[in-house]
Picture (cartoon, rainbow, N blue to C red):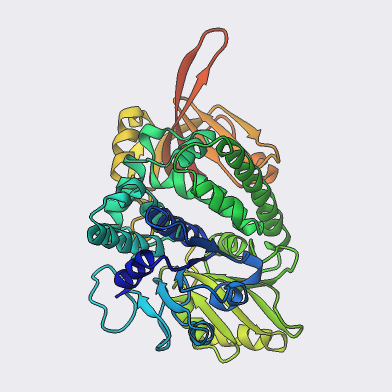
Length: 495
């Protein structure tokens, strides 16, 4: 139905508007669809709103011109009944390609969403970008073309960015296509600018490098920059400028995030089962990232709130844990006006007068929940056995990691600290020398550095990595260093 309606629009020269959501999955979904449709018609455009305005079709309908024939919302709008009714009443047909939960019946669109009742598509963990790509493959079949092959790397990035399950075989396949078969020239430049090895890309390179750099633009209310960049599957004169600006915005994002965490880390009460902070200075674009940092630090769900659309409301973002669905939990709370997103990440709004009641509700629902600060690991090795070959072997096994298939964590024993160094523009990185293996601690502070003992035996837990860099003086050579990105360490107790 969806594909037939799109093909009819192509053949009749109808005006098509694609509405892009504001995260990586949303903008890549829009770019994939636009890149395919522009092969057949020039009567197609992408529309969007900034992140600070919100998610969903209700924020864009006043920008949809009356001469539009077909409106396609990607990565959002499954539950947007009234906004789509508004468009349909104007004579505009509506299609929705989405993967978020379906809470209501929406008779005003043709819906592609594996979450809807009766859908037999087996991958319930698909992202918006993957679903759009599958639609484009069917368009290719009908039109006897192969244009979707040119964009085969983008669905995997959309999946990883939206933290979809990496135990799902289809998701793992597309993640492999992205990392092993990278075609997108703009992404290549961005990976290189962030010191990633294009021949050995991993999910971690994307999730902690390229992905937050692209979404830094949307978080700064500059979604156009992110879309312009993702349009650069072939290099154009502007591409390097886009990459430079994305990295600049990402560095600013890191600073804001670190400062927010520092402000609030001492205000959390042990008895609260959910971390809840109100800080309108963070901004809508970064609320979720700060919630993620707080959740990780305190081993419990976190909510970061700012001011809502109305004077008497709060609005913000939540981050949850794998043990239960935070989205479902908030949906049961009487003091939440609205919530949406995924099980572990999304948004919410509530009346300001109900904040304490919400805290009480959550504490009651989670009265048996005990935050777990235990550090788990997959394997342990002696530092004497850690070398480039071992790290490369482990890296290949964990290359396509993500939700439900986390990167490997290892306990390394027999370490002797010979030196330490405080690094980074804001002194938030500690390098600890242990012979052939360097320990690296990121997002930390001078306090942590001062507590690291020197000339001491320790064991440390973290992820293994090889740092590759080129030395140009006095003679050019490639230097490789084995590293452990540590979560924690402890001094070895002598028996």
